Image (tube, rainbow, N blue to C red; front, side):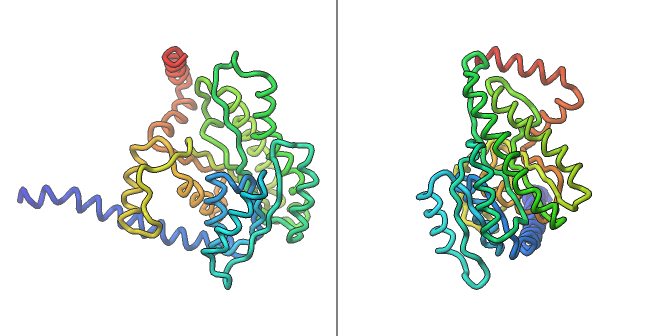
Length: 305
């Protein structure tokens, strides 16, 4: 009896993990079918997250338009995608040079993007710039640069693509933002401000675009990091390991965020928060008990300042 009691918890955990794995596999397959033949634009495709988004949408059969600041890195990404793809069910990606922080050039780049296939079905705003430092140590010039990359760049591109979507009464816009668009933490003022601004804009855009059947989603992960051990894709034990590991890790892996972006596109979910229990709780504390979070921030600032 005692031996069976000892085995009960591991067996229960194993059973739950198996159910979760089956659910995620079915969800993953349905999500991939939803983007087949769709024209998908991904900004900053050469970043870690951008590469993973490119991979999952490419294997799903999307017609990709990949944007990035460096042509050599775009070509390397192109080669990596083509080398592992099945040419019978995938399309060769189109490559576009674009610096999302260079707002003055985005209108011309948007025309180039639309010329690739004549339309855009899904726009994934992925580009982002980070900065860390005390408010008084960050120059106003750098504040403006952060706002250009994280706010003005994405909304300028969105506005340039939007008329085409409205005329077709079809389209999806996804903003990959940050949990810091929901809560501010010390020494991230410029970054958090840009992310809060982006959330506000896309929340309003979502309401305005409803009459045109255009969906707008925001995906808010915590900071993106790497697992200490990266298991091989498709491994059942690896999926169980990943599920339990992320409960104790603070960040999320780019693979996990990219897969959630694909599922968000498929489900057209309005807002997604990718976070472990502690940062997720902080968002709810900020909403219902803001004075508690203020006190926590003050303690954190005094500790690290």
